[in-house]
Length: 155
Image 1 (cartoon, rainbow, N blue to C red):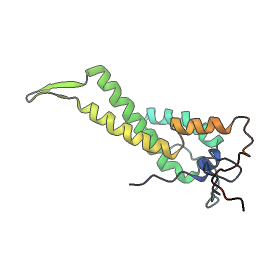
Image 2 (cartoon, rainbow, N blue to C red):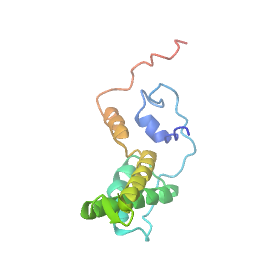
Image 3 (cartoon, rainbow, N blue to C red):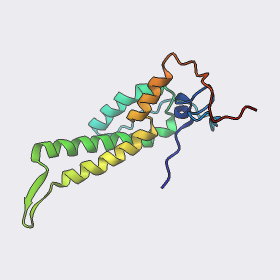
Image 4 (spheres, one colour):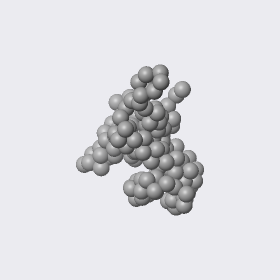
């Protein structure tokens, strides 16, 4: 399975120059959705709602979310809530359980592992990974973005 394409906004933030990605290629911005942040669904669990409130201000400030992203962002937030609950269960009850078959991994271990994978996947879609954070930090420096693309032709 190939990599998931990054949104144009993330490509531009990581880019070498205005309108160019990190490889110096022109970025097609795609359709011009209205960048209105979605409202949190009323049915989010309390922990998911807290995560929504934590990430939404920065996603909105960077114009990375639109109304149509509501479902994907809700899935990210609920994955976080599941990960946290499973992790806390393992911390409280231990990594193993005693069963008739002997000592087995606690079911919450597998739940935390699966939720963590889902969480990373959704986080990457919204630029919430450490590698994206580093790209954002680079874009906020004194670099004027005029660095030449060493792979670009001269004409």
